[in-house]
Amino acid sequence: MSKTQKSTVSVRDQTAPRATVDDPEEHIDPVTSRVISGSLVNICDEMGHKLTRMSYSSIIRESEDFGCALLDEQARQLCETDSTPLQMGPIPAYVEGIIELFEERDESFNPGDVVLHNDPYYGASHAPDFAIVVPVFHNGELTAFSVTTAHHLDVGSDKPGTCIIETIDAYSESIRLDALKIVEGGERNDTAWQMIADNIRMPDMVMGDIEAQISAARVGANRLEDLFEEYGHDTVKYAGQAAMNYSEDRLRQKIDELPDGTYSAEGYIDGFLDSPNPDEKDIFLAVDLTVDGSEIDVDLSRCDDQVDNRPINMPFKGTVIPAVLLVIRSTLLDTEEHELVPQNNGITRPIHVHAPKGSIANPRFPAPTIARFCPGNRIADLTLKALAEVVPEKTCAGIGNLKVSTCSGVTEDEEYWVYMDISSGSYGGRSSKDGLDAVDTLYANTRNNPIEDIESHYPLRVSKYELREDVEGAGKNRGGIGPIRELEFTSPGRVSIEGDGNKYAPWGFDGGNDGTTGAIIRNAETDSEEHLSSKLENQPMDEGQRLRLVGPCGGGWGDPMERDPEKVRADVLDDLVSIERAEDVYGVVLTDELEIDAEATKQLRQD
View 1 (cartoon, one colour):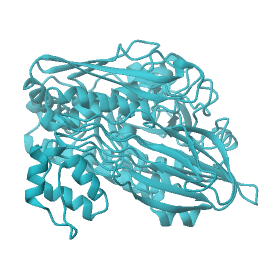
View 2: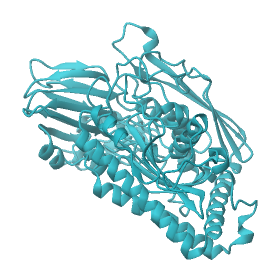
View 3: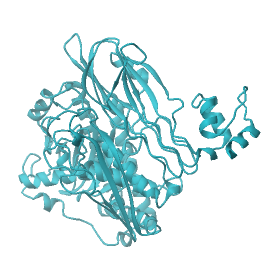
View 4: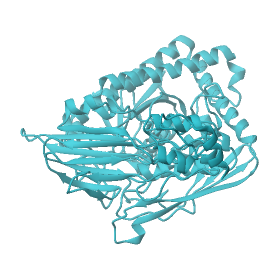
């Protein structure tokens, strides 16, 4: 069969299990199995390095908002790189969605194909996250998939950038690319490439990032073929299955140690606080987590209904399930206590997530979903809160959610520029440690974009970047402190912001205080100061105008009066806590020389 000839084999036949056995360990020795498993992870890491180095945009190159993974022919994940959980977690769902679409169209995978996919109703996390899928063949049979995902800075929505908070349906929030073969049988589909380029505002950057994804995915496919050559195809497949079984067994073992029962958490997200429609704000989310033997059932049935015509609905497979899995896996298999357990299909087997169709956690098409980030991170936060009932020593108090901003404009040469900024949040206090300050939380895990990179590529200036003062979630172990990041436009432009946490503060735990809400302020500390909602839609910004993004502070853990006075003093010396707050909230009295007055502190705490 030629590379361009259509195969007559159905997709289901192509993805039928091969070299699959109940006990792969019978066919491979443990040393070889671990060596191959490590080689698979190394392949993904190489894919990630290549994607980082070749990308055009700062969101991939600096923030590392991407994922890389290898899957078997059944779309079961074998391994992944170390980057953003929200990019890696949905990768199996992307491939499952492509398989489903191919089955509906009577299409098939062929050697040399490259498939682009971004449909959140067929597995994608949201429309700006593009998956590039390269099928891998051995002796003419489909045997694996090499996949990269990445966030793209413009996807052809009705407004520039990808922080879209006002849109009516899935068609208006992006160009929809459903399992599109952009390379077919080794031949580039120039019509598809031109169609994509013509419908986005920054074709050079976006198409360059797609090319980088393709190169990285092809590296994965080539290295996997080399591994087949070195160890034998079936041996590699047995090693992959053994790794899945190992991960499943380790997670089941930790779940089995938990007391059976149902553990619940609930809370709200801001939604659209300035909306006159009450159904669009103060949106209720709830997690009911049931431990039964070595399995966990996560029920989201109590969450509010989907929000029609607003894009904060969460794709079930692409956002909700990865958010829940991440928290359970990282809580029960913390690498500080365990050796690294491979992240693969085995991790998913003991966890079952349910959400009724038509809810915000499982919307019906064509409800928009592009702004799903903050609600999904809140689902993760509530999953953590539910686990705190049963394993408090492994969890933390409430997290401060992130803000994602898109700044854009048109140059004098009539070309668009688009910059995406991720303003960090914070973690809550822990049983033995303070919360982490100014970091991306839970399933985000993206990196800080350096000021030098921003100011050298865009007409923006970072006029302020610092930690907040006197607003931490007080506790025996305090919550993490949110950042203040202020962007100044050096030429006219526009800005959109997707955020949350301006109304509902992160929760405290075991006597700890709640954290502090965030804020968005235009032209702070001037006569024209303006406090804005947590979501901002494509607002004009004049040259010289500034936008201050204030991150929430995480919740505290334990009674603040039990905090080590030396830790309170250290926070005062770091200008994070004032002398007055140290005394009023923590009961720690400091002298004029900022030394601890032990007798006065003891007396104040006794009172």
